[in-house]
Length: 262
Ligand SMILES: [Zn+2]
Image (cartoon, rainbow, N blue to C red; front, side):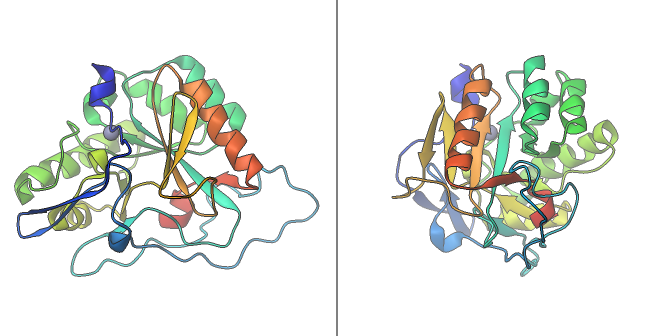
């Protein structure tokens, strides 16, 4: 049943649902492009010599800001608008936890954003602390992984705020970014995310599964600013390799989402 509980997108068309007086977007293959808010990055950093492609973007150096809140809502980001040769790795849920993943993250020098569901974090918070120590950031993927679209403000607030509150003592800081489960959200989600202190809601432009990268729309490669969705699965090593091979082929370096949205 693991596969069914992951935020597993398919190739279905985006279904736009009306619920709760707002527009609900169910992002089975990513959100509706019309709903996408992007963020511009500043000038590229200067490099001397030939940098290691996976070390080109220094840790913790802010490159851009999250899109400003509008009407009390955070922006929904599916791609970072940037001309820098960067892409972003995100890993969701936290169902499968293998110590080998820690070495893989450390050795790859990828600084992924981990969108963790509290019900899995609770089972082994130390595992994710170790990932944080090797460069990952801990982000918000709700308490119980519900489809948020159409849920009441109070129920969405519990899912998003309580997760942030619980992660703070575990990891020394609150998460800054929300990934709505299944990529599904409505206006209330974006308002609650702002009220809970999140800086942006983040979906994706490509996903990897069983070692295969799948691109959104007609794309057949990664482009600067693309956000790739992975999961904590038994295929983690294979999936990570597929993502990094593709990034290299497309001349892109993995960068930390926090440096562009934090
Ligand atoms: Zn998920």
